[in-house]
Image (cartoon, rainbow, N blue to C red; front, side, top):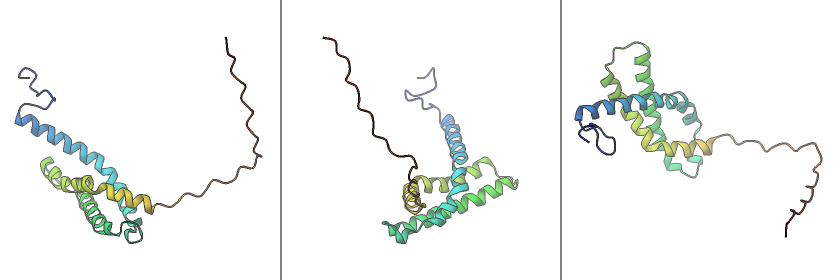
Length: 141
């Protein structure tokens, strides 16, 4: 372990290495979270928890919407070229990401129940033919 610089589970032995691993994790989480920032606002607007089987989800959806607004503000700052130190960006991003990690399941449940329902498939114009009877397999005795 000492020679490799890692515990048996591959965790770095040094506290400094843990810091860089945490930074790398937060940077990766931020990049992945940008998809949520892009798509969640429209989906949250479609959710109607009061008419769902889970009306108490309204407070959670409000927290999730606030988290997205915070992340949008941060993204605007980054895009507009604000000189944010990476540590500050990570510190501002993490609460929104953590909210989504904690309550994202409730969002998914509400988004699914609020999604437009697909129309049933149109009938096929061709007549239905019965399946041919299967031939018995040849058996060797």
